[in-house]
Length: 403
Image 1 (cartoon, rainbow, N blue to C red):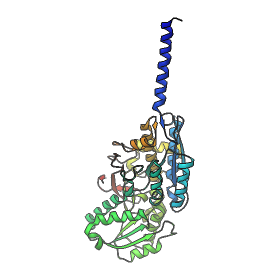
Image 2 (image 1 turned 60 degrees about the horizontal axis):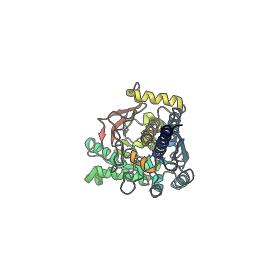
Image 3 (image 1 turned 180 degrees about the vertical axis):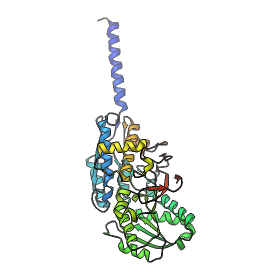
């Protein structure tokens, strides 16, 4: 071989080597990510007092299976590890440590509960592992300056309660309000928002407050106590099982206040059906997503895609349970963020992409609801619509509101 030809061959080989090395160099991984897979961790109450929410993990796992069947995220398969914490903070800590330290997940996604996520809040930030799209509306998740590794997803509880308070002031300015709330940060956030929204009127309008523990077998005594206050407005700021019990008990003792129900318990299938649809007529709540029982969405493209997905990947799931719509939307958002990461699957880049949402629209979101985040704003959802239950589905009360 002549020297020029030899030199040309050498240069070609060198060029290929440099190109290959550059391509390899562009790939960045933290524990939990590789050329083959992305490990995602989660804790959820598959047992215990909040087990109605276990469907979140099931529908999300089903959506990730769908993505894997379609080739994964940029060629990488999702390994989804969702562990039962029984809605118990100590179990959340144990399960989270296992997922981070032993399983070495890239991130935690969609773990549920304010006390539960609070129990691992400092731990996740100390380890600099993303604690993404936690399923709780506590205001503390929007704190990028002090907790840059934690981000919420759903409506802020305080902002939600302020909207209810504004509606009460507009429609029932002389209302006597009774409040049932969970005895933890979840309940305290709602109560603070309500009082802030009522402003100077809070002291005279709120005539009774009662709390419950998540492990309480019933809230019958609390509902009787609240009825005795003479209240004509009832704020039912509870988790699904307790919310259903409260609705049924109020009906059974012929207490007929105007009822407001926390958005975390809006599900027709998981809450209102167990309580009794006839007993739930007139209840007011707030939503950001399309209700699967609403005939308005019977031929909606996004909801039809969801129904087709449910039929194929989660056929045992309840098509009347709005939680299955919410979980599906959350999983789609998680896939979007990881897709945007490309080949840079580091903790830092996952958070960078999550904090760069620009008008993200889930196909199951209400028209006009868009998700936005910035490095200084970790609250993706800022819109909701008041709705009233008519015995069959939720009926809109006005337009979508910005928080």
